Image (tube, rainbow, N blue to C red; front, side, top):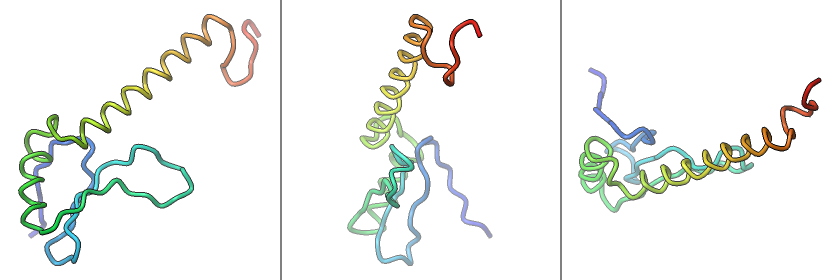
Length: 103
């Protein structure tokens, strides 16, 4: 029978199984393609602690999780920068994959 868990957090990636030495929950990375193999991972002292955390935050009240808040805030700020950049492109006529406005 497959091990199916209900997870509501949109930033949840995976968690370690009880047979692993380290008790971890992996969340989506904030940045990719940095040239390093980096993971956004929360490490716990025990698997029971990890499961309690996952039940509380990943499966239920994810919007109160400090890691969710940090990733959400970062992505919101990154989205605002992109939005402002596009607005600036419209005002200045710059951007658009190197094409001049009107060509």
